[in-house]
Length: 225
Image (tube, rainbow, N blue to C red; front, side, top):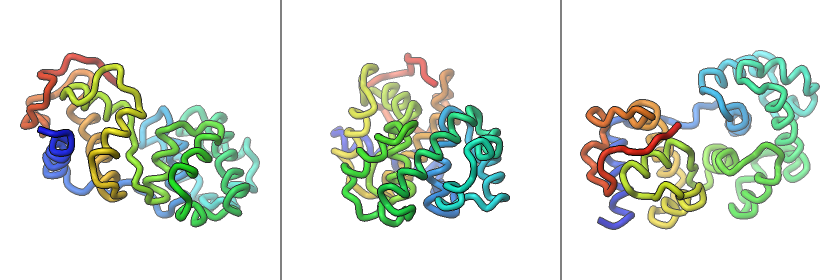
């Protein structure tokens, strides 16, 4: 079975089990960008609390977030953890928006993906996963987001080696699947959900929809997040 067929089989099995997961849950593209920073090293439930606090203060716009003092912003996003660091990162992200796109995220939509990714990676606190999340979920760019869940699932089914890095895993999807934002959106969401529910450090293989996928790696032998 070729890589394309393997990946599509995984997608079909997970999609049939979970259905449309409707990621990313947000009212605006800017809210997606904020969430991509806040979700670093924390559970989504904590992010939702922080987002709620920002909404109450009407701060989910680039202009409003630019005006608020960093210390005040930090207190509002405290539920997300590492709140002082994340407040600084949000300020840097908003500054990036004003420096490069006059504070209007719509200016990012037509940007060449490789150039936009380099710009985002230059923002303090924006790593590969955060940059790709912003590109896919906020800007609708056909970029695949890789994370620890994805790596764990692919390893356990023998599609990547243990030493595979994020760039290699990202390329696996982007080189073998149609470059469609909707496909990458749902596929990443399905893998994350599978990692949370079934493909845990102590996996629940007998319940997992991928038990029907033979793969190449046999039963799980690796540890993960």
